[in-house]
Amino acid sequence: MDKTEVMVYFKLQADDFPLEQVTERLQIKPTKIFKKGDIIRKISETENFTRSYTSWEFGTEYKESLDTGELIDQVILQLRDKASVINELKEEFGLECRFVIVIKINEGCTPSLHLDIPVIEFAASIKADFDIDLYANPYGESY
Image (cartoon, rainbow, N blue to C red; front, side, top):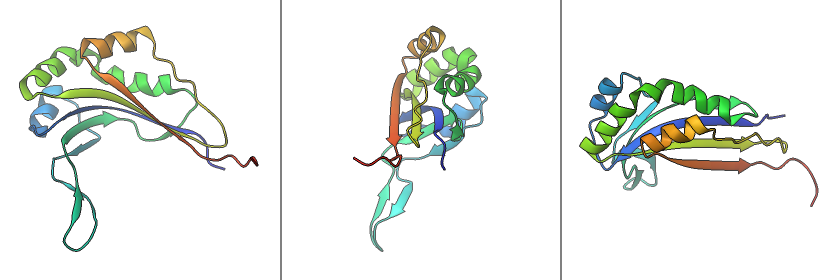
């Protein structure tokens, strides 16, 4: 039986920007990066599905959890003292920033989703929005 899993990450994105400079200035190793034009998957021998923007991401892997706040705090703890650097990078490279919360609900076990005041204040200080993705897998009841 699969358990409910949660993943949280922060991302900086734009059409194109120097990923190495972002990593160097934030002094945080990203968990994922990609450049505009990178191949996502091959569609055919002559056609590919490619990335439409460049992205620098830092976050957690999927973790069994019924508390999204615990994972949000893990990510923000690493970023909290970097607000001024994030804002400088945003202005210099035209970046957008976002927190992404991905929840895979299994067996009907839904996690709590609470954004406390420090999280909201930090997100506001860097003008980040939140993207919440929910994937509810069936849990065996007849309809």
